[in-house]
Amino acid sequence: MAKQPPKTGYSKPPIATQFKAGQSGNPKGRPKGSKNLRTLIKQAADAKIVVQEGGRRKKVSKMDLAVTQMMNKAAQGEPRFIHMALDQVRSAETALPGDNRTDDFAEADRRIIAQVLERMGRNREGA
Image (tube, rainbow, N blue to C red; front, side, top):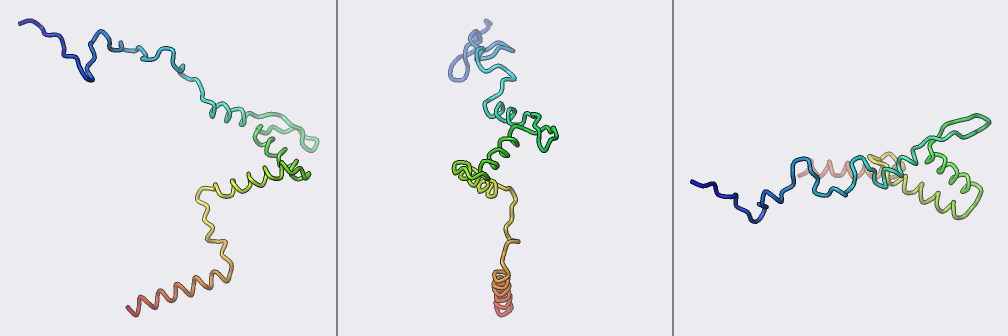
């Protein structure tokens, strides 16, 4: 009995056109180990540089230095930097993970909450 060639069709390409083992389907594609823009920016922001602060040399990240300079210019009264600093502070406050603001209730709010909980307890007992 003669060997029949394997069937070809949907999802079954001919053996001659299949990728060889270890051969990429896109040989001119992104090289292994190359970094995307986000990674490059993060690495550049985390890079340490030496600055003089109060007569002492100190290593800080570029991002720390940029934030310090932005806040210093805002403190000097430059409107553009004031606006930028306020936006950054606002977004930093709202983006904190696991930030529970329940401890920020005023005393009046605590009394109202206690009264509501008391009423709810009474309603359960009466039901």
